[in-house]
Image (cartoon, rainbow, N blue to C red; front, side):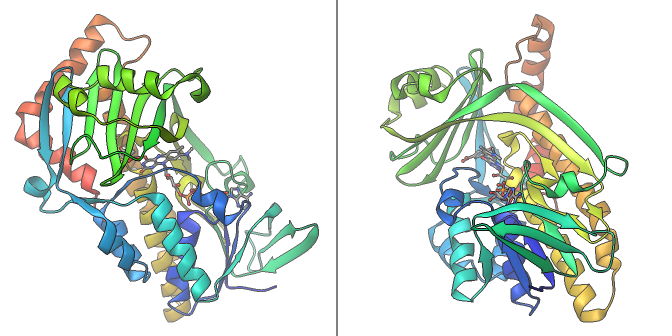
Length: 389
Ligand code: RFL
Ligand code: PHB
């Protein structure tokens, strides 16, 4: 088999790149280790920045998103019984939308399939060969038959546990990592959200987040020890704990219901440099991870795709490789800023096992500064809605 761009990973990054390139007449093959239903079963991001929204529209997959998503002009920050709102609209003249990763991934699959896109599911043993040469190729097996895909470029969109990043030799690659001493226990319920804006809440019992997908689908999280098992958390125990971590007027009106998904995500900050090795380009979670506190994971994947898409278009349409040569540097410049915001927001709102009384006072002072300073709120809003590409 031969294609122009071989894309490893059929998550949002790989599908979005494939769909954008297809509309410019550039041929791709997407290799996905799991099934379509498995990928769609993962409950992940919920907030989209305007840059990602525009990219999805450009990819021709904006119709359902535009009809069904919800605009959020601000967010609530709560601490114990206190709270304040930060207006994105007032400080940045823009906003974010609520549209789940599951939905946008479904839209991308539907579009690729309707247009005859080549997505191969259930691939095993993907290996990247000769990435430094002008004739790279990928081998894999599907249903026990071996395949070889010759290509011009390889896009490594295979997430944090994929093979693409590991293909870059240790002598070239540098990894930067921080692992946090807690995770997030998340629950999805078919109940109306407790509030029309997200509530990020810092309490002495730990962090909590009240989010949503639509009018009758709520997504709630609580900070938990990494050693916890979701199976040990009954729905009742989860909601009891959540209610203790948010201001009581929200807790009193919260409508609870049986969970339809419950899982624990560990929190990690991670960046690998460089994001290009020869003709292999890393995108999204394959290259970087953020703790979810800033809602930046999926949005940063989208900015990588923007840079790579433009670099590939320049190469194929104008014979100019500048965009590809600049890919790693441009993507990383934005990634590190999203990393900083996600790390700082995590530090601001979570309880750490080794926190001293002094550390707690510092955290409280920072939250109160954010509450009282228009400038600090403008900085928060600017980061939350997403830095320009
Ligand atoms: P994905 O979504 O991990 O997709 C990678 C795809 O590659 C496939 N794959 C392979 N395919 C072929 N061969 C191999 N060897 C392969 N190895 C892996 C995988 O099956 C998968 O389908 O990465 P992508 O596309 O870069 O998208 C990134 C986003 O998924 C991610 O940044 C966000 O979901 C992060 N994230 C969140 N971000 C937010 O902004 N808000 C959130 O609330 C939020 N919650 C989360 C999250 C990530 C989580 N993970 C990764 C555990 C919650 C969780 C649990
Ligand atoms: C979510 O709705 O899953 C969500 C929203 C905002 C975050 C993290 C997760 O910061």
